[in-house]
Amino acid sequence: MQPQTTTTTFLAVDAYLEGELESRTRHEYVDGEIYAMVGASDRHGLITLNLAGLLSQRLPDRCQVFSSDMKVRVQTVERDIFYYPDVLVSCNPATANGSIVGTRASSSRSSRPKRPG
Image (cartoon, rainbow, N blue to C red):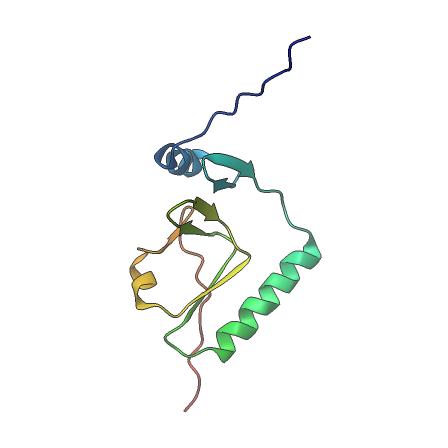
């Protein structure tokens, strides 16, 4: 009996990004393979919202707090990954123009009220 082989098709980054623009389901990308994201529970959503709110209030004004719809690319010599973290904090001015952090469709940046004083 011959052993069965499994063929895995790897998706190029450009094809993944193009597909994400049209897809109703978000996907994470890990080294050419994509993984569909599942919906979160009510409790998970509340925890994420509360955490983003607390971070937004406590971080310096130069920092931005993003929630779930922000896509983050992690690229190393050996790996190429896109994630949708629940909460993301960036204090890097380069993220203000979207060069490091991108959105799935439009920005979901938390509005940050100005602190008195």
